[in-house]
Amino acid sequence: MWHRFLSWLAKRYLGRQVQKRPPAPLSQLNPAALERVLVLNATGLGDLLFSTPALRALKETYPWWQVDVLAHPRYASLLLENPHVARRWLYPGRGIRFFRLMGELGRQHYQLVIILHGNDPEATLLSWSTGCPTIIGSANSPLSFCYSAAVSHPDPHQHAVERRLDFARLLGADTPDKKMHLFLLPAEVQEAENILAQHFGTPPSLLIALHPTGSAPYKCWPLNYFAELGNQLSSTYRAAFLLVSGRRDRKRAASLASLLPGKTLLTGGRFSLRLTAALLSRCHLLVANDSGPLHLGLALRVPTLGLLGADHPHRIGPYQTEWGAYLYKKEEVCPEVRCLLRHCPDNRCLQAIAPSEVMHQIREWWEPRFLKGLK
Image (cartoon, rainbow, N blue to C red; front, side):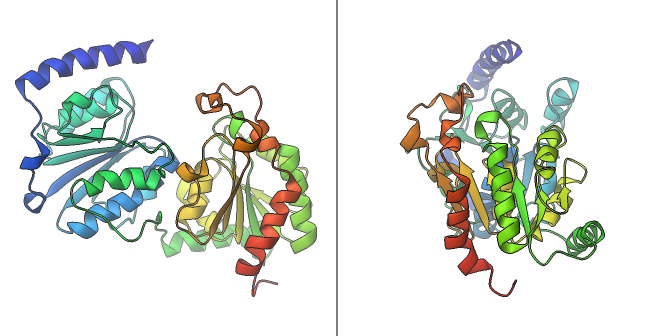
């Protein structure tokens, strides 16, 4: 109800503002004359990582630009040490802090604002509050009348990385490197190694990460399947396990830990996001549901096998990475699209992926490429 009311109010307010201050045509923009650029990407973990190639494209093409990013406070730390980002703004949520941020952004004198990924009406309101004459956003936004240019994506299966790169291409920017990136400090990696050594006694010679949770049940491979897979991995490779989960879904991950042989390390929201990433970076394989840690593993160059159900792998799966693979059976077993709206009564698409198939994929794809020298 509140969202609908805010959307209605923003549409009326911005409709009047556009009459007073129409957006400048993109044809009038001279990228060579720009210095300060704001990029909005204030949604999920995966959304932010999908945007890192676009940020790289902007900075590689226009190295003199100061590119600032407004991100969700839960995930903004992933941009630390990123050489393509000058400053991080934190999305404060609704309330008085939102209006304070609007005022602060209005004092920054940005010359270009790009909404790579953001929820409306908040994203457009924040962009408009900068006073910037040139805003680029999505053609799907109900507030796209405020933009100098609106980017459309006619291909429903276009990958999320390419969708964000389309915004950069509109400005003449691109990059040959379309891989996601996350930059860790040596001290963070060392801290992760110390935690592993302390927990397991000695650093495991083979550490496999499992991510058995997700943002909603319809995205989760059955827990008993994860347990069966874990037992096969243990008997086949004598692996130790890192179980990646948040604080809210720690109970589900702990249930899996109780079904696995030997010692396991459960993150369970006990570590910062960057330290969790550093722990994940020490793993030799990640098997993950369609959720943030899947994309985290890919950005860290960890061999990652995604178990995908609701969304199509062409849109959100591993992209142009030899260390990424996936299993996907939705089109074979369930033609419904309602699961993308979180109305799926049961995730038949994920239940159709048997543990034996996952183990087969690991043997055929991961073992010959990534296991050499570890045994």
